[in-house]
Image 1 (cartoon, one colour):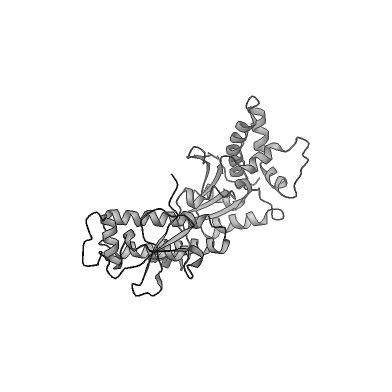
Image 2 (image 1 turned 90 degrees about the horizontal axis):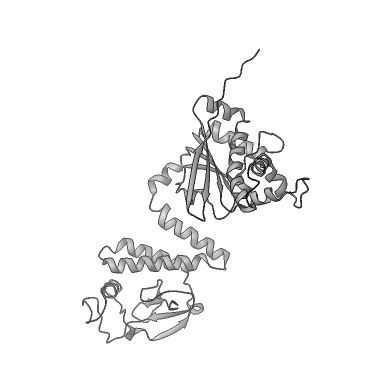
Length: 338
């Protein structure tokens, strides 16, 4: 069903500038904007409940804003481009503030405001203007999270003490903070192509080594989790590299070959499977290779032996909405000198 391309705004009732936020009735999409004014003889006044037939939500909104919500007052149509000074994030912020302050709103009115805010967020997310999208995103974060959690963000000013270090893919569909609902300060995250952990190498992989060292020795994380995922392009690239090792890219194929042992194992053990199924198997096996590579870092081995650190593998399937988590039982013995 097509949505009505309308936004409803109020002016100040005295011919002045419009109030900076959209008011319910109808659906929203970029397009034209209804400007709702209050006629001198308007039947909806703040001291009245409204005429017969006026919905409860509209009556509440009319009373709250001292403006009419009825079509009798929707006299002027202007294009959205003419709405100088208005922006999506201002509308969202105003609606959010309204919902938090007007406790007398009925459940119907409150639900409509929430729906309207959600639609504005959806429109904003699809904005072709990158600056507007970033501004809107931060405004939402500031209003919905930062301002509503002063204790949390006050503590974070003092430092961080995450319990998790997470290796995740750079894929835009698999943000670990989103899928695992990590709050700020909970997880120290490293993201790269195909969520791979390279072996200990001060020269080739200093960046990964620095992150692991900082997490284990300074932040004292208790768990390192490597999360693979479905439809991973990096794993598909690894599985597609010819047996002679020839590559077509400057960086990607060299990087994903960190998990060549996973590719070799999958190809040897799943010869009868199709390429897509082999890739799915490799997504998980590559996680195990990365867990093994973590053991090449002395401070990781030391943490595991002291039982202050645990390694976990995981796989997120965003096609089916599932998440697998597993442990590998490494039987480590203290080194002995002879």
